[in-house]
Length: 544
Image 1 (cartoon, rainbow, N blue to C red):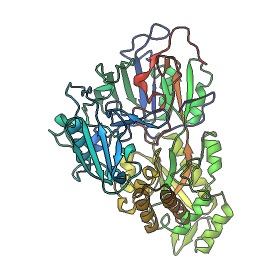
Image 2 (image 1 turned 135 degrees about the horizontal axis):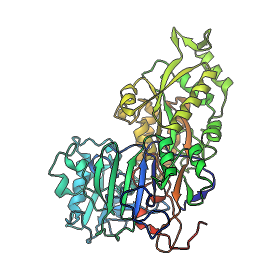
Image 3 (image 1 turned 90 degrees about the horizontal axis):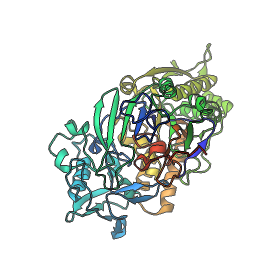
Image 4 (image 1 turned 180 degrees about the vertical axis):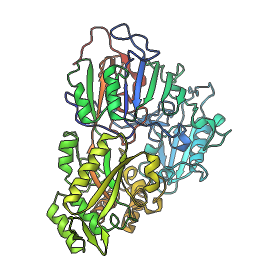
């Protein structure tokens, strides 16, 4: 998908926000500053750092990790293409067997050859219950994986799982390194070795990650030779450093990105996303867990105003994890803003207004806390708007900022302004978010949502290849969320990137592009999803 250049900054990602572009004037290692010769370094600013760089623990599961490769990869249009595999898989046995033939010209960054044994080791280790991989259930369909010689891998499934090929963009780890140490705590988690276009050269926790190009990369050595991921949690600080030249590009909230609209040396790109903001309504909270309160909040919230005022139009109202422009969206599940209707629901359920306007029922005040991540302006703005809308219905929501270390222990009973979303198959969006058996499993099912009809539909959706049956299953999920919304979905957010206009996406001079993006951002988001293919602009090229 081509990136959409825009003149005015209108949207942003907060969790996992990054920045990247050409060499900054103050970046050690930059070849030239200002208008000199060609540059081969890049600076990246991120809002948070990953917990691990090990594919065995979940890093690179959605592709584009840059340190690693998967058997397959997504192109600019989110279509699967071969990567470590020579071709797309051969599917047989009624969709139960996937056979991949591997490239024979790939080595890991330490020089060791890549073979089928590495693929088998990676997937078997992920499925091992002793491995602390929070996304293991995404491979629930996988029954076995076997090597046939050095160049063939055969996956056998328990049931026909329609999006299995998309799961094989997962990064592959080297058996000869990772198998020799503790999978959860070994050095590989912070000093990875992969087959990707870049090699990690340093990780100063809380400060930065540094990388260099892999000169022996099987798909050609990148022109961007060095870059740094500076950890900048605060949006304002990230924008300030971009303006000062410490960063050459950034992803920013709308109001901050708008400050660069007249900068002729930079270009702004908007990427479509599945990224949503939602409020968890914990089942174990006596107020947020009440179905009437949940239903009331679902229509008391003014989503369109959030899109207009907070996102400045670069986004759309969210009624669930599936965007309204997705073919998987269940038409008719849109919820209109209806304050009077919300008040009626609460009245009929016995939640009566008190002297201060806050409702109560059986001595319990309709009040609960709502946490958002410190320094995350978009989450803060969403939280404050949500609390304001709720107060009009007689529900008191106390917004509080904190780090994830503070928030996570409180998620069982306190609401959280959360984010999520994954492009592609609806199973990717919904299973980890809503399956009752995953309640309390880290950041999976944060609200501890428990709906048996949803559980059945989620299983039906992932256990058939029949498109009509799958559509019916995910329609059921979305309609059940209308009846009992364990989350209040607020907005789907487009991502804006401000990037120095000094690179093209290939040697032919094509403009930079973006992919449809998830919520969670790693190294390869935004216009730099294919940074290994970037080329410096030739002298005389101008902004178009």
